[in-house]
Structures are given as C-alpha cells and as structure tokens.
Image 1 (cartoon, rainbow, N blue to C red):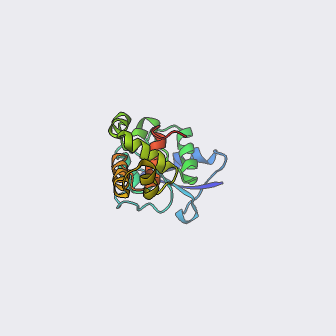
Image 2: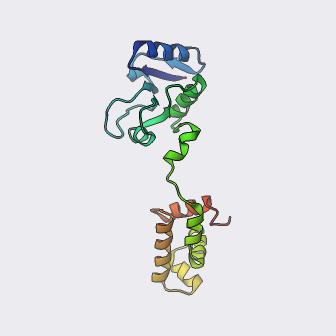
Length: 183
C-alpha cells in the first residue's frame, strides 16, 4: 500500500485529486506528510535543489524538467495528466524510479551524438576499450599492445574524455550502450 499526501494551492484541486486516488487499489490518501510514502504536489514552491524530503510527484506546466528533478521531484507531469499517468507516476516514485512523459524524456538525457563518438575513437582506442571491458590494468594493456604503460594510460584517459566518463567502469558501460564493445 502506497500512502500519498496531496498538496495543492486550491482546496478544490486537492479534493479532486484525493477523490481520484481514493478509488485506486494500492493507494491510501493520508493527511499528514509524516504518514506519507509519496507526496503528490501541484506546482513547486520555491526551494533550493534537493529539498523535497519524500518522493514527490509534481503536476505543473510552468517549470523546467531539470529544475524539478534537481529539486528532488521523482515524477514531473503536466497538470492535464490522465489519472492513469498520475497513478503510474506515484507507483514509480514510491519504487524509487523517475517518471516523466515520454515526449520529455530526451530533455533529461545529455544528448550524445553516437556517430561522432564512434568516429572520434581511434582504432587503437577501440582496442583499448575492449580490454577495459575485460577489466585489464594499464600495465597489461601496454604488454598486450606492445606499447609503454604511459601510452596505455594516455589511451584510457582519452577514452574517458571522449565518452564523457569519470571512471573506467562508466566508460565500459557507455561503450556497451553505444555498441563499441563486442560481448
């Protein structure tokens, strides 16, 4: 059972959303935030990033998706979202997931032109990323390729930069998603 507190600027809107949720199996409307698992909120009050305490489903038309997510909202829907979208977003937020309308999902992903990444990795870097996927150290990469350890480290750092990755593991994950690594 997911317990939901509804917060709205108008009493009529709150009553309407509470009535909608009362008939939903698996959802219980509660009065106090301390009793809630999820907050369904209409519009976002001014607050610094990361300030929502509970998983929050935000209904709004006036806010950037990134700002809402940075502030801690777990779901952002337009005010005219359907009842099924609202219920799905509540369940997603309760499960620790982020929910946004499909047409806005690309706005939260950092656009990475896949063709330019594949084209920008050199053949040697393609060899190195394959070895990174095997969990091989820079020293072993150098031995396998017949290059210095310093050069192997240079290739690894270049791959990290080109894939916008902070760690070797992150580079491998991006490489897998982009089809750079054969499994």
